Image (cartoon, rainbow, N blue to C red; front, side):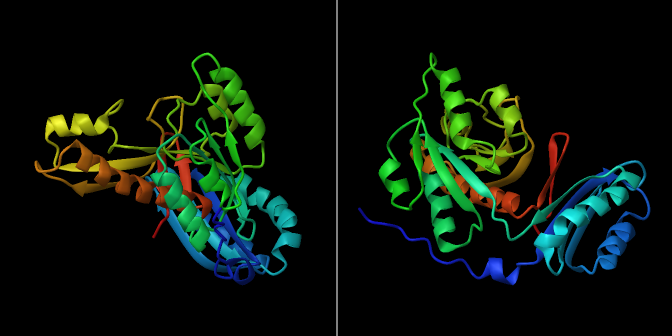
Length: 300
């Protein structure tokens, strides 16, 4: 069996050993940026990047992402979080500080179509996806040998209408509580509300059309019948509303009357893998804030 050895990522962990990211959402008002900057300055932190967005300066929501370096971050982080709580309370903030040096753990769910899974594995192997792929979970055994050649555990958990509840319980046991995000890389099963509740805003799905158009089965056949001139893909967080969760990323490509259903599928697969990989990358880089059923994505 050929063994795929993961290349060493660019010394991210060494270069960013003391780097953290802070995500903030709160009602807009004066003084938020100043308060955050002043707090970090007081504690000896150096801000290396800052992004902010206001939905409406008067009465809307405010979103902020800050990257900063702080000497001895891992030792000082608990104290920093404790002291920032007072600043957060003043502005009614929802907030989180992430240690960049701690790589997020991913679980990838897949059925039989492998193009999205392969893209993620390629990017991970090249060091472009700065995370740990902890496992692949599938309701089919087809990709077991390929996935295990990367040194990644593969869990085959069959799902039938009669065993769906038991299968999901087994998936919860396998995934556990230390997985940061679950990626549905063309996993062709509907996720139950109880499963979603365990990983709220931490399950990313790729939908094989440019939502909200052509929801349901055979989207490319629907697109062909309608004579569409663009096709696309949508990556979104999974909610109880089927294909209705907060959208993270979308992309499209022009097509013509010359493209049959097979060609539309081929083009669509390329878009799907690119869109999903972008969404996953932005999630693990803490670039996404969810508000109601929308996202703010600081990807610039």
